[in-house]
Amino acid sequence: MPAKAGTPYLDARDRAPRDRGGPMNGLLISFEGAEGCGKSTQISTLAARLRAGGRVVHLLREPGGTPIGEEIRHTLKHSTENQAMTAEAELLLMNASRAQLVREIIRPALAAGGIVLCDRFFDSTIAYQGYGRGLDLGMVQAVVDFAVGSTRPVLTLILQVPSEVSRARLESRQATLPFMRDRIEEAEPEFFERVNNGYRAIAAAEPERVRIVDAEGSVESVQAEIWRHVGPLLAGFPSGNTAL
Ligand code: TMP
Image (tube, rainbow, N blue to C red; front, side):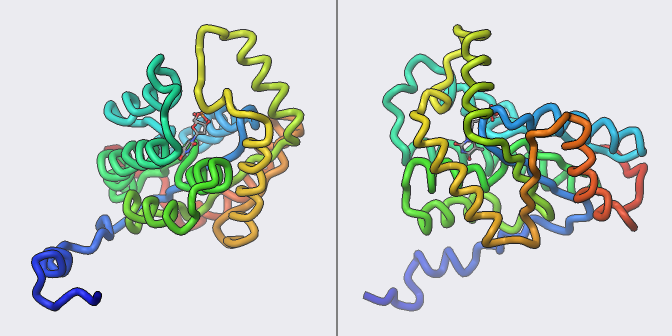
């Protein structure tokens, strides 16, 4: 039944300010990929290079990146009570952490002209909760849109390694840190195959924003490839911005 004009619900919605997040002068770049793709090393190397060039860089991770987000991260990954978590709860918790990070850190950082490097952002939700867990993609997209509003990366790099490499790195990490149980990493290999299919679909759907980087080579060669994508964004982007 169509809602009547003047219902309290519609009035409230019409009055709500649109979630644009204010003027954004900085750059938001996100990094994606399966477990063991080498993201963290590459992001830190890139951050160091940008800082050496006088840029103000904020290095963030998801889920997490704020005190609230880090608590949510613990619940999602490591808490002893998280075994029974449903895919729906997982979707909402990922995006609760994200909604906090966007408003507490990312928007102020971008407004001040900083460069924000995010170790995972909303494409992880599409790939893991959408393709991996099999939640309805339209619903997943709606939740993501609510969490981020207009705050979207200008560039997303998906670091890709063959699933055998990813699996082997994951197993060696689990063997080295057996006490660090991780609920998501415990999923079956088919889950990670679906996640990788999700990333391929995302890259195919948004070729302007999303680029796949072959991450199997040496740290240096992968970093050079990353720089080929990031470097051009810096042209005309002043260095020495005011820190937050
Ligand atoms: P990581 O920081 O070690 O990559 O761990 C984050 C885990 O959370 C990883 O398994 C991917 C998963 N994840 C999702 O399932 N959905 C999301 O939206 C995000 C940000 C991460």
